[in-house]
Amino acid sequence: MANINLGQGVGRRKTAVARVYLREGNGEIIINGKKVDEYFVDAINAAVVAQPFAVTETVGKYNVLINVQGGGINGQAEACRHGISRALVDMDETLKPALHHAGFMTRDPRMVERKKYGQRGARRRFQFSKR
Image (spheres, rainbow, N blue to C red):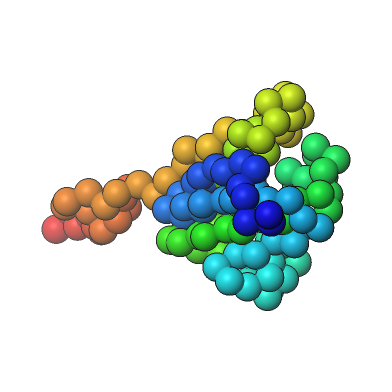
């Protein structure tokens, strides 16, 4: 019965979207079919993904299946963290205050600003020539 989802959540950061499924298990995290250490080669991003479990003291209790797409590596890692936090709260409401205090329940709203017409970028202007 390891395929029954105990909780699920969607995490977002910039343009990255992570769909997270929480299941009973031994703490294995699978992202897009790979283990977390294989998917996020950088140990910092792998640690970011596991932060909600450390905050709620549930390390090694659940297996996590994550489908993540879009964005870059850091955005994907933070989207996974957001999704895991939401899945934990979906499973057990009593974990919400700890996760909210750590800042994992809030979606980071910062996005890339769009390029405006008549400019080189979002805010950068073309070089001004007086003559």
